[in-house]
Amino acid sequence: MRMSEPLTVAVASGKGGTGKTTVATNLAYVLERQGRPVWYVDCDVEEPNGHLFLRPGLTEEKKVTVPVPKVDLNRCVHCGLCAEICRYGAIAAVGDMILTFPGMCHSCGGCFLACPAEAISEGERLVGIVEKGRAGPVTFVHGRLRVGEAMSPPLIKAVRRAAGGGAVQVIDVPPGTSCPVITAIRGVNLVVLVTEPTPFGLHDLGLALDMVRELGLPHAVVVNRTDEDNDSARQFCRQRQVKILAEIPDDRRVAEAYSRGEMAASISGYAERFEALLAAVKRMVVR
View 1 (tube, rainbow, N blue to C red):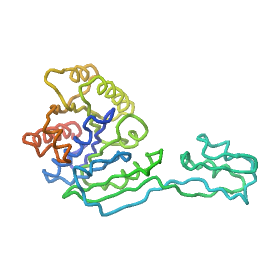
View 2: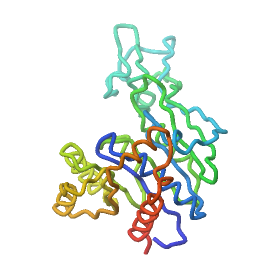
View 3: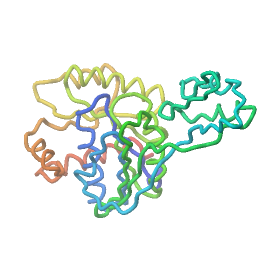
View 4: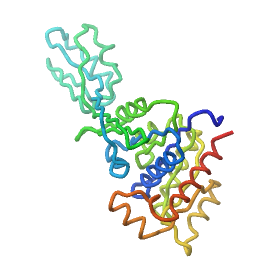
């Protein structure tokens, strides 16, 4: 991509607790310090916590719903075709009753099309909300999944759509390698995978590498909580042929800043570390 085109950088991790949000929020922070228009896009809708560090003033809220079947029993001919076509058990034909289970519905629309009597109409199920605002010069958007909701991808898609163009987007991705992660990283310019030099961290980094390579997305690694005596992450990345963009030391000051909801980049020497990481990100994606 050219320098004039907006960057979309996803910060992901194979497991929770690696420092993904620390890296994402501090990248947004140093971008803002450089005068670049930046969006912080928190797609970790089950546990969004970027707002604890960026502290935005939230000024907009939008409910996000998905379509679910609504059955008119007066028109239903009890053929059972709606139940036969549903792979997820969200609609069931029991004698002369049609039962719906909105929480299991994947909103595919198959039951609407299958019904010969046109007895099924489109209802709505609330999945969560999207909130937008500003944290100083940073434009902020995140999603909050409704308590008890099982499927987060529709809300993550809404969060991605809410982010405007013309600026760098730093996307805070849910941890892991499942459908919500794939929804959050689809189409980005670079995936930054944050790991820690532990057996669990490197095992899950391997799973995340398999995922982004299957999707064909450019990617690199940031190693958090490094120790000079622990070379395991470097060895792992050499074996998997993946580039390490930065190493962040295991520093008590960073942990204390995190516990207070403060930026690691506010600590002496750390703004330069994240600026160097940002420069490395740009080198990978700007041609």
